[in-house]
Image 1 (tube, rainbow, N blue to C red):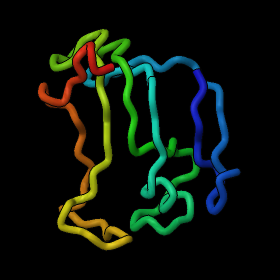
Image 2 (cartoon, rainbow, N blue to C red):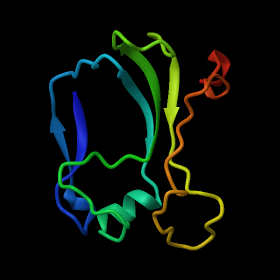
Image 3 (cartoon, rainbow, N blue to C red):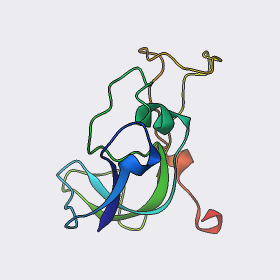
Length: 123
């Protein structure tokens, strides 16, 4: 398996590809085969170290992605193999500024409820 990691800050060349063993999900985790990704403004803030929280070398820069569940942990009940899922970063709508301060109100929200599941015709 290959994934991109942020190894050096300040320039796009700091994002490097690495080879990994295929991970196995823990009891409350799901393993997703990623089908689509996007880097957005938040990822650029992290790359340029202007995000309110400090970046960590080795992190995978990804705010938005979509894919298919290929394995589930033993305690997972809401997802099953073959489910189409997505995870998205949404800033709190009260913030209209170009730069969003990190507060308790500006968290990530993930499309994990039943209404957010992609239908076969939508994929």
